[in-house]
Image 1 (tube, rainbow, N blue to C red):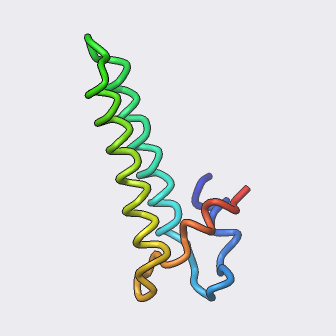
Image 2: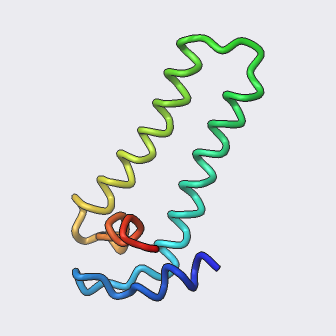
Image 3: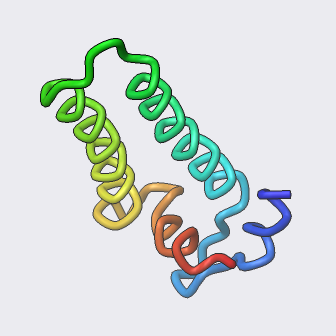
Length: 88
């Protein structure tokens, strides 16, 4: 379902097709968030360090994906973050 929804908005205004890159990044992003929330929920003691590392790992993933999607113009994933944000 995700692939059909995301593939319908390709190509983007950069002229690139998202296809499997957008579907893969949406699934991987969901996996990162779910895994971090699972760590947070299953912890015996929730303290500041745990929250720091859970939030930090999620923000680090978002930052790395932003770098790949907007800074590296030669990447095949260039512009996919924008396409994911405007997808229905």
